[in-house]
Image (cartoon, rainbow, N blue to C red; front, side):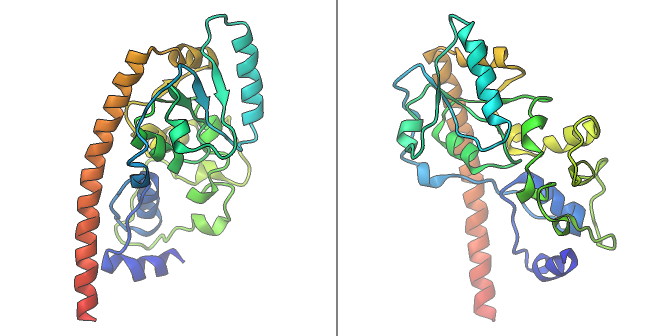
Length: 259
């Protein structure tokens, strides 16, 4: 499967990866070197950060561990008189409503989530788990990224592929059928660097719930400073990514005229 994919797509340069980890996995599986062109969330160009409250939004999560996390968070908040108000995200919330909060808390459910691109494009200060806590959330259900919840076929490797990468740790050894949290620490840590949760700068990374509450207590001035940095970085990646897409569109048009 991976050999046929590489044979069909690689010579035409017809593949890019919106997630850096996907680009690295393709190099490991097929020897293909595809460009990393991050998601831009251009559909949110008019949904800029506009906080109207000091409340912090808890972004919805379907992770099995999310309800327990929320219960523990509420217990700690109850004993923390100066804790910021953290609001659970209701169904059908608009981007304009999301941008009205001072900050947002996210639990990573996969290595690359479009919701992260969305809030970064808005310049919304974002709080995410730090290493090592993040491993509890980001890997167990990472099926769309050849994770353990995806069929074994997605983790196929062509051992005869030319120029196949040889990372120090396999992206698949720690994503077997059974989740073994007490093993593969270095493997997870190595591949974490290629997730969007680590690549995106200016995120507020918390090591525990008390640390989360401390970071979530940021002032309005601090929030705006972080938002400004996020928006500047987003402008930079939009410029770079659109340059690539323009070149790709010209190359595709030129190829079509020769067929």
